[in-house]
Image (cartoon, rainbow, N blue to C red; front, side, top):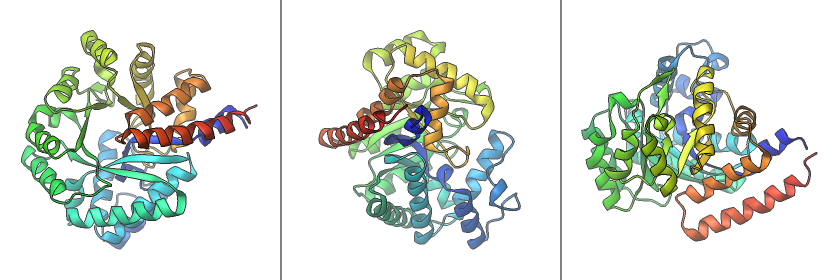
Length: 344
């Protein structure tokens, strides 16, 4: 076994993965055809070839609106979990989905939830994969829509839904606008995370202060992305001191983001921050979770031991109880050591 094979094969826990961005191109194409959603390409082979971030968002939203029925959600999430398992050995996943995006195609929250839970249950039975769900606020929609979304989440409790998230371009919706939605989620025991200090297409669109707002006002216990934190050393020091989990992703939404993100991620690791690695939108980025680990090891100049440390850090940051984390860590450690013995 080569080192690259080892990195592809080790069991993984993913805490930052977007449902729509992970739907395989053929499945997304078939759903769009089934539901009469016109896509700006001639077939699935080019569906995930886009020129810039806003092309990516256009495809993302079209696919979101093409997933409409219980059967659609069931089929799509099962395909996502199968892909992650077969092409990266993802055995545990906490996955974002945006209810207000799917609502644009006519899906109601109960329909989304029923379909997602069916697909998750089938993947658990067929592959042993565990998946938790994180309804995520699209910050380009209104704070009122976000609050209504959380009300629906609270009104439809289930074991699979463990928390809420906040995503999309930060200038469209700084975190403080969503304080009421996050307060309601916290009052009902939901965990909270948010994309903060992220960047797109080489343009920094989220100041480090957004990280502090997410921690102190929204009550987040982990941060997604955070690459712009180094503009403010005090923010970096607080994250280091408190060991706040930071979920980072490589590659970015296009190849030209890799150098910028990789420098920030390497600085996070060197600064002693609590970092774990995830695939973000693996299908739309045309990279598997296994390849994400291989790419990261090379771009970030990390040893196999350091890559394993990133993997296990995700377990510590997972929204599981202590018994669940210990079970997962034991299982992962046993499998990792068995694979390590085969590395040439």
